Each structure stands twice: as structure tokens, then as C-alpha cells.
Amino acid sequence: MVTVVKHPLIQVKLAIMRDEKTKSKEFRESLDEIASLMCYEVFKDIGTHEIEEEYNTPTGVKLKKVKLDHKIVLAPILRAGIGMVDGVRNMIPTARIGHIGMYRDEETLVPHEYYFKLPKVENPLVVVVDPMLATGGSAIAAISAIKKRGYNNIRLMCLVGCPEGVEAVSKAYPDVDIYLASIDSHLNENGYIIPGLGDAGDRIFGTK
Ligand code: PRP
Ligand code: URA
Image (cartoon, rainbow, N blue to C red; front, side):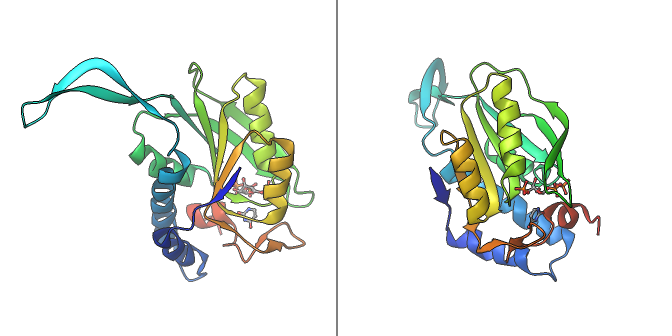
């Protein structure tokens, strides 16, 4: 399943991120806020249950505490995925965080894994986060590495994608639901999303 989250608040913030004049601080803040807003859609069906522990309301009624049905593990693809972690964690403070170090070779566009660590959690929902879904190579490699460790309940949360990347991930892993704020027109010859927003990692970390 592919879901494009077209909420007006997200689209306004995404336009700010696409603007080449937007500086790193505002770029990061907008990404953070969009990540929070997207949680509404990404987690809307995960379910909740009551636990035995109770609390008192100001009206004198006792209610049972409520928990999410799944433990959430966030798996940002480094570096740019880091820019979405706080936005999600603000909504789900109990989420545990893994790290997937991956970079795309600039010539071949093939992803190379340089680091992998996920928290040990029983039966979690693992949400891979990365602002950009271009060829789909990085997301596919990340999902494959996660599955190899025995985790099979996986979602992919991106900001901007393109038809090539969405198709590649959907074909490789039809069981992984994909959430994006936009599916842009296409990839250019250098593997950049058009119109996209440039190099997300460089804009987040100010490396260019
Ligand atoms: C970017 C982006 C994704 C990847 C997408 O990372 O953050 O991880 O490219 O491209 P793909 O879908 O074609 O694999 P990059 O490799 O530039 O690393 P960085 O975040 O460290 O800059
Ligand atoms: N990675 C980015 O940061 N931007 C793109 O457009 C494609 C890959």
C-alpha cells in the first residue's frame, strides 16, 4: 500500500523545504514538523489496548491506562533519516531508535551499508525513516537488512519520492506499506528527484 499524505499543513511546509533559499535551520524545523504530522497517518491503524493499571480523572471517574498494541522501533537511514527522528519521537516518546548507516555511491547509485544497529524488541513495528526515496536502492537494502534480523512488521516513511523508487520498493517488498508527503515527477540522470528538494543530507547538516 502506498499512501501520499496530502494534508495542507504538510504541503505548505514541504514547499518551504523545496525552496533553494531555505536555510538549514528552517529546513530542519520543517522536516521535523512534517515528520510529526505524518505520524497521524502512519500510525492510525496500529491499535490500542487497556491495561489493568488505573488513573483518576478530575471528575472522579477511574479509567484504565491505554497503550499502543505494538512497540515501535524507528530505523532512520543515515544521514538524512536522522532529521525525521525527533518529529516522530515527539509523538511516540516510547519509540526505540535503531540506526542504519548507508550511503549511495554517487556514480553507480548503489547503496553501501556501513553501520547497522537495531534495539532488541519483541515483535515490534519497525518504521524505516528517510526523507528521500529516489531509486529505492537504500530503502530496499535497509528493509532487507532488517528482515535478515527477523523483523517482519515494517513500514517505510519518507518525505519525497518518485515513481521509480515507489515501484522498486513495492515490487521488492509488497508487504511493506509506504508513506510519503509527495510522489514527484521523476529521477534525473544523476539519480536526483525532480523537482525534489536537492540533497537532503547536505541541507540538514549544512555540508555543502
Ligand atoms: C540519500 C537519501 C536516501 C538515499 C535515497 O542518502 O537520504 O538515503 O539517498 O536514494 P536511493 O533511493 O536512490 O537509494 P545519501 O546516500 O545521499 O546519504 P546521506 O544521507 O548520508 O547524504
Ligand atoms: N538523495 C537526496 O538527498 N536527494 C535526491 O533527490 C535523491 C537522493
